[in-house]
Image 1 (tube, helix red, strand yellow):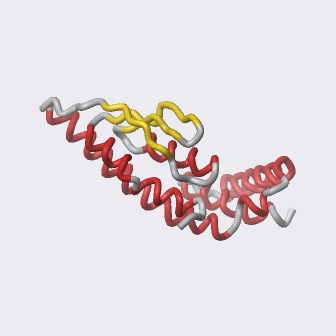
Image 2: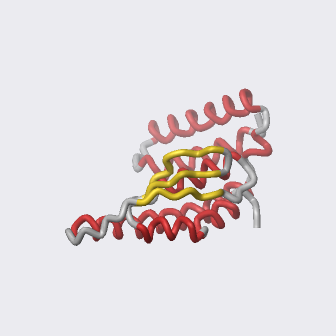
Amino acid sequence: MMRALPLAGALFLFWLALSGHYTVFLTTIGAVSSFLTALFFVRVNGRAKSVVSLTLIWRFATYLPWISLEILKSAIDVAKVILSFDGKIEPTMIEVTADLRTTTGIVTYGNSITLTPGTTTCFVKGNVLTVYALRNDAAVDVEGGAMMRRVRQFEGGL
C-alpha cells in the first residue's frame, strides 16, 4: 500500500490541475479515485516502485512545460499556414530512428510528435517511426532530434 502513495499523489495533483472544480465533494472524489487507481495499479503491476518515483515525477514536471511550448509554437505555425492561403503546404513522410532505450520512451516520442500540430506518427516498427508532416520544415525539425533528446532525458538517459 505504501508504494501506491507516490502514484496516488501524482494522480491527484494531475486531477486537481485538470479539474478546475474544488468543492469538498469533488475534491474528495478525486482523492479517492486517485488512491483506488494507484492501488489497483500496484496490485496489477507489482512494480510501481520502479515505475513511479520522485525522479520520474520531476522529469515529467520538466518535460511538460517544454512539450506544451512546442505544441503552442506548432499550433501557431499551422494556423499561419492555413490562414495565409499561399500554398505552403508540403506534405512529407519521413522515417526516424528513435535512439531510445525503452518501449515507453519510443511511445512517448511518437505521442509527442503526434501532439504537435502539423505532425503525426503514422507507424512504429521497433524503433523506427514513420512520421507525416504537413510542411517540410516540420519534418526537418523532427529529423533534427531535439524532441528525441528531450524524451531521452525524460526516460532517464543523458
